[in-house]
Image (cartoon, rainbow, N blue to C red; front, top):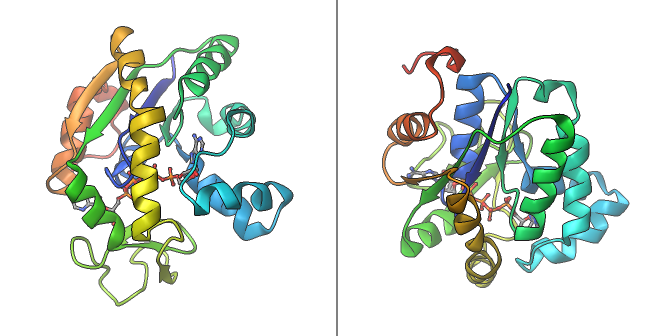
Length: 226
Ligand code: AP5
């Protein structure tokens, strides 16, 4: 059975940071709906033009758009061993659609990890975040700086500030998270799938806590912790 995981948490909790580390460790794709939407915007597609206004003001894009994107993505070959969803689902409607999609594929969810970080810390993280324009790797000007100024350590791409990482949009995103996404914690808790993990501390410590709390079998962990 594929190792199907979800990473939840408020904006800035470290979902993207940890999803890519988990993906490398488990050799399954990290699927970020935020990255997929930003790619559409960069490519100038009709979908990109449609979603930009929602994202720039910190609102969720409509469920039917994002559900169609995810349904298509899960059918790609690289998901046959599992996946890590980052930023999806974000509403109860999305969670129900995911349940239906997985049922059709004959799969189920393994665990849902929720990273907990206090609000003042996530505001600090988001206002200082810089993201690689090419590979989306997140950095932070003081908490997690790149080795070379404004240059990605991984691909050499240029780092930039996301349009929704400005103070007034951050406040809106946190409000939307509390109203629309936090109720999903009970949705998954009631199904016995939720693990809450402290998202503070060194990246490797958070990763180790995730691997332990998500009950990831040792046989699925292909790359040892350095
Ligand atoms: P999305 O891109 O998903 O943004 P988000 O959920 O707000 O999450 P972030 O990417 O801001 O934060 P993160 O938790 O990944 O943190 P990160 O690892 O980068 O969505 C953007 C928009 O797209 C939404 O507002 C919406 O409009 C739309 N959208 C996306 N999905 C949707 C959906 N399903 N439905 C509808 N609309 C959707 O880390 C943050 C910073 O902290 C970085 O600087 C990092 O270096 C630093 N950091 C990470 N970990 C640590 C640590 N342990 N200690 C110190 N610093 C750390």
